[in-house]
Image 1: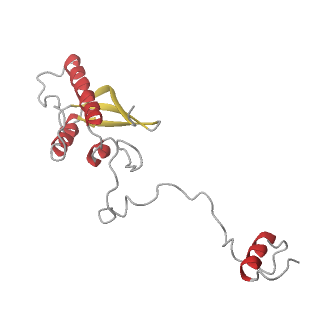
Image 2 (image 1 turned 180 degrees about the vertical axis):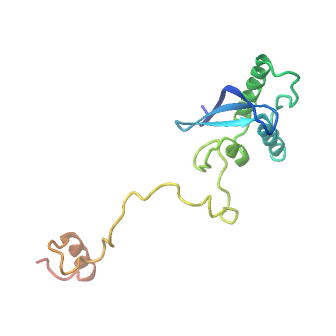
Amino acid sequence: MHSVMVCIPSFRSEDSAMEKGYTVFKIEVLMSGRQHTVEKRYSQFHTLHKMLKKIIKPPEIPSKHVRNWVPRVLEQRRQGLEQYLQTIIMENEVLPKIFLDFLNIRHFPSLPKTESCGSFETESEESSKLSHQPVLLYLRDPYVLPSADDICSNVVIEGVIHGIFCPDLQPR
């Protein structure tokens, strides 16, 4: 089983006053138990295909030109685009970064079927930042002796410091 699964369950037509109508395809992406949805136009699939041709041998993409926009024809295009994405996943051991970006997938080098991070020289500063929040936060350095005005001194810290710096002294 692959760590990335995609399907295109539906599509919808969009009408705009500025440009002629177009179809938006809803892509559901499941990766490592997490699912999200991405919406893409056919023109975005076509752009992805042109970029992928430069780095891999992608499968055929459904025809760019459709004579009529009846639901049956759009359903065939939906099925073709779904097959296109699934074939890319199945035929490539390493998924190209451009493909992962298209699906809005973060790049995890430790997961199979994703592109590795590469060398440190090619890493951008943005992609090398950690994506999680700190788990534990100290208000002050826990390895420094408590201040003199602390009501309860930290016996463990005192013991460790005495053990390291004064190993010959006996405990109190």
